[in-house]
Length: 147
Image (cartoon, rainbow, N blue to C red):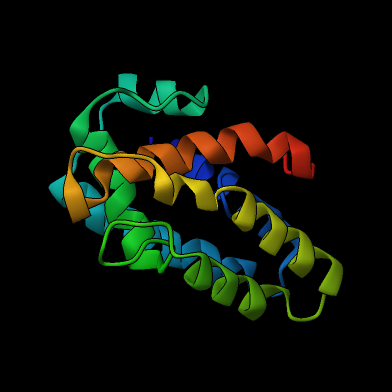
């Protein structure tokens, strides 16, 4: 099940890093983050299956799991918003040798910036916004050939 969750997270915003030189390090970092966050926000098989099918379960713990991982990764700030700067910093780190992929990554992140303007009900917790980031990632990935 962890493998499925990991694939889902990496499919999202970080699917474009598949050819990054330090991909193993990046994968390990996200596995560690998922394991850490799943202690507080456990996931069951049914939820994992929905996520594998690119559907965000309408359950607060799952949304909060994503928020937790996004925050640990630097993709979400303490205000519960998509950190465009944080995602771009990760992109610069792992895609420094490939300007074309770096530009594509930054454009992809910019395409999802609007999630920060959407109303949410959980304030700075970021759970609702994490679900919006997930949804945007799923919707925009085909536009950037990330699927």
